[in-house]
Image (cartoon, rainbow, N blue to C red; front, top):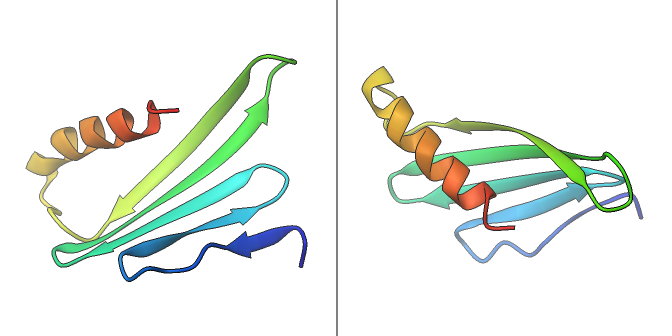
Length: 79
């Protein structure tokens, strides 16, 4: 319906949205898959706060958590 949608999958994953304020990024690559769910909550007229959860099925060792978490934050700070 008009409250949700999915961008075309180009073979590397996709983007879906669920209005009014949720997006799902699905990254699929040769080494595994990662999904990032984001909820965007307006604070006032000029500020929006984003909460996110990222899950993956690659580099599953706890040793890799810090590096992957850092990369996730770098990507999410782009906007």
